[in-house]
Length: 308
Image (cartoon, rainbow, N blue to C red):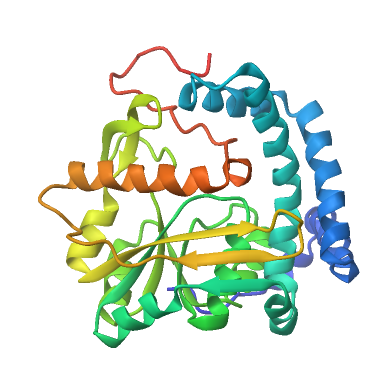
């Protein structure tokens, strides 16, 4: 488990100077009011949409696949909103990593903390079943105001970004566990403690089943929640965070523990999980990460890509 951000003199190497300059620019925006940051984020998102044609194609294809009955006008509006919200998410991350606790608390509401307390008080770990909504970094920081847990993350290839994300995320977590370190996740749950878990992205064929996700009948979906809940003797609590419609703050909600989870088999659990994911996404489709190639892995190897 990672419990400290390790800094080394190698991070001062000239090859990292452009990254540090970018960090300086990002930190300078901390002085701005949240609404101003969000206006800047909207502009950045629109600019990204003009030039990141590959991401535009991916997002639009995901929307087409998930919502085939949606009108063309609504699909285009959702696409436009997605990129604007993605631009805003840059500032969500900046604020989550560098705002003070006092400022976080000025811009947050949190609901459902009693469900976490009840589980921990009864000796049961908590799996926060989340989706990749764009303000997720801020969601973790807000949750940390109540009960710091264990973050599950993918180590970054860039050493400067790895240092920054570990340092930033440890402001709201006791420690971080690489996403492949299942044993440490189980140990943390049995402590008991809280960990984060997401099952709404395509992680490949390993440990996945092909089940419905919105209108796609065969989306590769990992089944780790079943194993973690069973081996970790933990409860699974759906979790959602969104930015207010007027960009003045963030709302976080933790829902009651799922009944009879894990169930009789991991496929049924995964189907139930995807249904929950769909419900969470539908609460705020604009703020979901549609830029990920959710359907890149096909049931039959060699099948044509859904993104061509």
